[in-house]
Image (cartoon, rainbow over the protein chains, first blue to last red):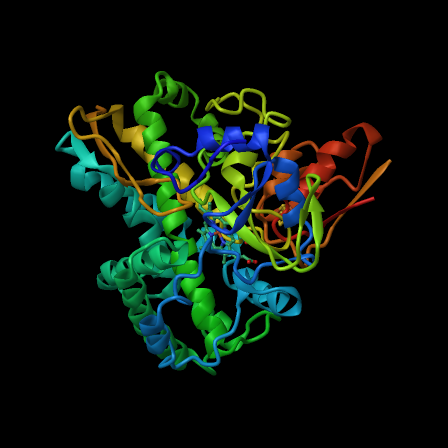
Length: 411
Length: 61
Ligand code: HEM
Ligand code: SF4
């Protein structure tokens, strides 16, 4: 196959054409410009996710380690209060991962989270809509997609409402630095924000240590209901994973859903006629446009995948954006189809196996509530001529930075 | 016959099993209820449900 790069402008604007080319012509391909092997078939991604002892997660989140090449950022990080830094949860393997996973599963149990916060989410989304409905238009990312997951993250950390803009600022910088391929100034800022975030969390942890609270941070700090207590570094790292993971990917999901509503003829009407299909629309949107287009692993030994010899220590990009459209498993996978039976082949958008997303049920519920409220109160949702949507510029993220929409108010 | 066992100490009620295999798994109030034995013809669906469980709580024999 000829020159092909995921970093080209065209691929960053819309990667799916490049994915199809990779999947059909060279599904396990070494990309010299990123020093990474890209796995574009469903079965190969599934195999790697399902074999965590052969493929380490120690750099699961990033295609390029931005901090490593930035001495100023490393110097800042060395001032951390939560040393030694250690690989936690999404970046951990084996026993350490199991320990973190047990604690987070307990602290983020969807049954309890949704029982405690479900009703308040519904109230919140209606307040967000109240703020813009009279105008007939809004910028859906800043006025709807961001406030909802941010409110939930603030609730998880028991942070006051006024902290939300600060939390979002931290989250933006962490996320940008993680993805790599960003200017050095962003990496330096992210390192400084890491220290500020750490203090924010550790102060809250200190206030809870030894107490009998049952909120998220108390559970991680003291261990509740049989889950082990974690140390400061572990708690800070898990919280930053929640801040970024619980947030940015859900924002992208909500934006992608609103974009589908605004651009797909008949979708709005079909869902209004049969609201029971809203979860199916969410599931199809998750398959069609995974907010995180890939996760990463490193080979621990020499491997042969798809007939290619891959040496130990190689970085793999598990291309979910491509796997979710793999012709072998999805008929007409390049199209959004509300009627698709997504139980046949479950998309890889939340990963799978030991590291499968612990927030997936919460994210799905947030999305269903958000879409239900929109359809309830707005109709004829459409893009705004002359004010087109703007894509999020972060490598590996599929979502919008801006999404202006217009609508009619339902009576 | 296909034997199904859910380790309830692991289950956190994500409901992925109910989504994928509603004939074999369902919620009743706050409880997850499932068929312990189902016909061989449903094996593929039950195995997909086990794979989808974020807690890896479902064992299929
Ligand atoms: C649409 C929204 C979301 C998407 C697309 C998403 C995606 C993912 C993916 C792909 C993984 C697997 C990582 C791997 O295999 O290396 C993951 C793990 C994780 N997610 Fe999510 N996520 C979402 C929402 C959330 C929410 C709302 C939370 C928390 C409130 C959350 C917390 C986590 C955590 C803590 C992990 C690490 C689990 C582990 O390593 O064992 N995510 N997520
Ligand atoms: S998918 Fe797993 S965790 Fe979720 S309800 Fe079923 S058994 Fe429980």
